[in-house]
Length: 196
Image (cartoon, rainbow, N blue to C red; front, side, top):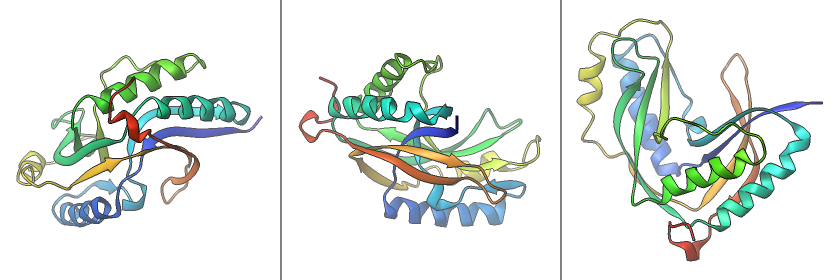
């Protein structure tokens, strides 16, 4: 049985992608040893499902459709920059996403509960909305990284109004991952960002 590497995400607007491209190009000139994400691949991950048997895709789509119908469009702002797990040994450089209200948190909680009924492990850690800009190649500190990122803190990278959830397939290649949309589920405009 073929397995697909799947995850659920929110897409970005072309304006935010353009700003992220300019930002990562600027950061790449100042920070070495980082594999920067291709701008077209940057998205807001809601849930990573991992390797999933193809026969289960229909049930996942059904769950996503039901979850989307219970939530309204979301308003988000892309802004602060940071690293995981910390500046002593950074592995991921990210742009933070600030939601307006509780809509994003409620959507992620609903996804976790609903997908757990299909056998997917519920995430125990709190959800931290972020966009992965790059992955640090060497497991070492990067001198000046904190200062470089904090100097860009005040910049807003754009506001987003999200009205769709995507189910994506990821295929890993030497040049980086390739993403293919498996399903699009529209958030319900009448819900105005709150679960009912």
